[in-house]
Image (tube, rainbow, N blue to C red; front, side):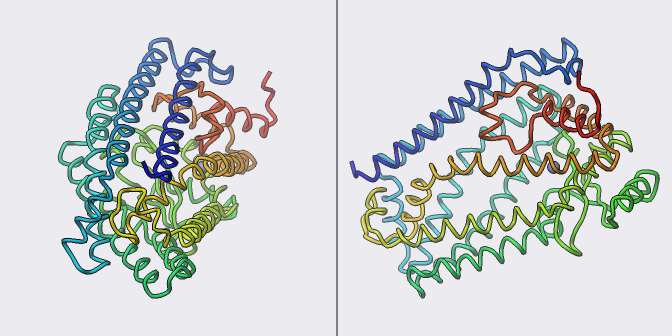
Length: 416
Ligand SMILES: [Zn+2]
């Protein structure tokens, strides 16, 4: 076996081990007493339902992880990717076309493998616990649309990056970063106009008590928001959400119809105050800059390795230079770095969430934010006792108990 393939397989196993250990720790922690601030959130029957929900999810994700591991090893060890690369060479003389065919097949195969899990999650687990609203036709149509979107956007981006590489050699990463940054910025600006309408309907929030309350509260916090939209989240699930998107004049607030259904006006305003906190602290801009920096680092390291024939040979490639095989080998070799970066990225994200909560509390929305968050958590059967290691590694938000305690402290309540 190629020495580099042994390293790659070791990394694949490491990733599997880390996610398995985290899942095991979380299930160990299930019986932990509920934090004091959350007592009474679930009655006994509902808490049993929550625990069943967690167990069902855990079982499926364990099966999914194992199946994915077996497939990954079955593809890597006999050199299936190398064989596919050779096949693509026979189908076309154009290097660019070979690359696009390779990744087209790769994307379709990945989608087919993950499809049964997505289907089971939606129509068995989410259905059984009363969350699913997706119909069969919506599910298949959405799947088809996301596949087409992935293929089209992927093909455009890949072609540009490959052409830059073939003209500029290893210094292509600088221009490729510029192109990716433009791509990221374009989609953060036009996400609501271009991507969301493919899957959901957005309508401006109609005039009335809720709109007036939101506008009045926003002005009090120093904002003027006119673009408030309601999205039909109920097309897919009963789970509720709200978010802020875009920059500058393309800024818009989006409320799920399920949020409006489940929360009181005061609570929705409080959730919005939290979102305005993100806006005040320029979190969207910071996240965008962070993703661009990550892309630049990835492309730079890739540019150092791309011409090394060992990357292709490790995956069973028959030619010395295959851009496709180099890219896949690189992403597998880079995966432990992602494993190290995840806690850091999530740490920064949790800090931003705490600051946004504090912003809402400072403007007098703390109490309603607490009751809104509690309702949302109870309605989604969320885990009240995640293991600290899981929170540290993978939680983008602090736990519900941590958030409530921090807001109460900000509100100068006694937690005793
Ligand atoms: Zn937030």
